[in-house]
Length: 261
Ligand SMILES: [Zn+2]
Image 1 (tube, rainbow, N blue to C red):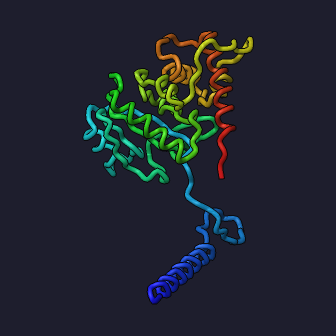
Image 2 (image 1 turned 135 degrees about the vertical axis):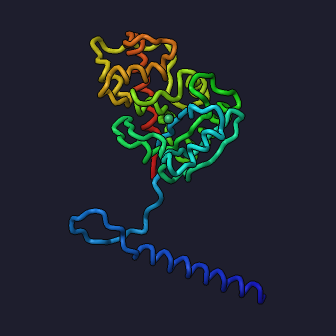
């Protein structure tokens, strides 16, 4: 009886402390950014920002230790949320809710700063070799976990080279995007595709998918590295225009089925 009364008392105290701290956070002044005159009426209804993309990289290094030396050096000012070794070891480097410095100058589908809205995953790979089986298997597990927890549309798993065409080429053409797609991750279409409308413009199609087409040849090269790595010619074929149209349709269908608070 005595114990029950003590427990009840504690519960009341805990509830009171929670209520006071909620009240205090609701009354705390907001940090001021605008110089315009504003009336402060803080709302208690907010949370941390949530990532909406995953950007895949390769490190260009030969070992996890080499990559870690860069990714944890204050002088280098680069990082990622996760690094995956060739052996499938996952190293967690930056809080998922914080802005890691992995994408740099970037653009995708109207977003100018992918660092602010993405999780960055570095794969230990020198850029001239196939990706290790254990590494890809664990990457698929991590991508399933991230997309499920954050409600990230599977189509929003893209490469650094996609968001920084002409500046970055990772992950390389060895990266198994098709295998990811078979696991329900990333964006993919299998032939046959419906032909693109006659006269469909390359820049409009690539921009429709998300690419920055300021430098069109760079956007074409990035698209081919991801969706047609066997083709090293500089121009888009009719089949690739049809593929682009299929990808755009799937992307729109996938994004519209995700709901957010
Ligand atoms: Zn990168």
